[in-house]
Image (cartoon, rainbow, N blue to C red; front, side, top):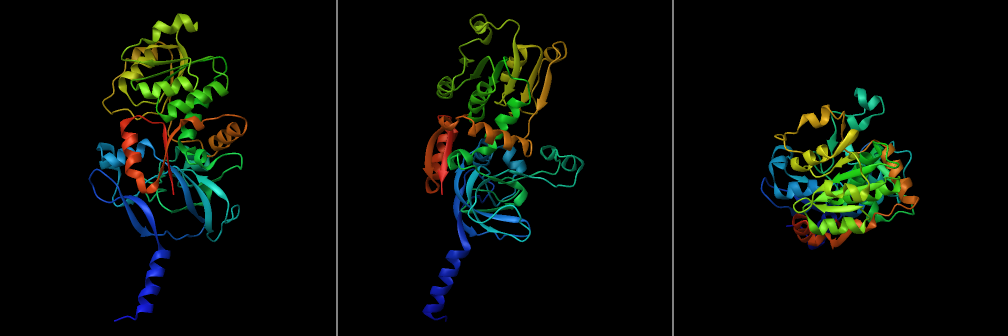
Length: 358
């Protein structure tokens, strides 16, 4: 039998070689907080000590183990892709970063070799690997990602806000894909990305910003964010507000954030001829639309998947440094040990962003 000192030494080694992580362990609903091995850095890799994470709708899909999760996730896997932390270790070949830097990271790892990657359009890489989806993610004490995915956080930006740069980037990419100055904007879906989009559209000069949803709590947040109108589609009609807002022929820009077929069709119905639409929400495969609204109005539809690497990251950083304030979207702060409560609140819809502190 090993001596007591040997046992104590083994315990100390185990404590230093494992970490807490929220993992999808089985092919059933739910998640678990487990001790897992700390990932090791490789060539061009960076190991980050995670300080803050944010729960995303993707994480909720995995938690609930819905059809998307069942066909996408291979268990076991550490989930999560929205985070901020401090660089703990750098691997061989890392040139631009150092231990102690405060950073966030792009949640899509791209191949770097395909036509789009080589043309500087990494967000369109067909071989994208999603952190916390296709590989181990950020809901852990440490995460290792390539140096090229790491984004340094400016000293003027809080770690809480930096922890959800990923969805903020979705909102920035969706909004800035279109001319916005003086335009009338319709946002469908008042989740966190829709709420942040209100602030972004205001910041870059939109005239009217109307947002729709069925969730009165989130619509109340939308009003606080400064939406021209926050409408519950179960009781209010969009067109009834055209006269007050001096909208004549419809909206110039549409940002579809809900993934709801009814919301998409409502948007297309109320778009101005020649209008531009960003499609971010994941719609069911069975979604039908009235194509007359697209063809005869000459609408331009653009699918949005993630962020432009790394122009979107640059733009959102500069907007935050120049006065864009999206901190109000944070409604809950919890310890990682209470992660179940965070997912319960997310599932209820009675929240904005939920931040977990590590």
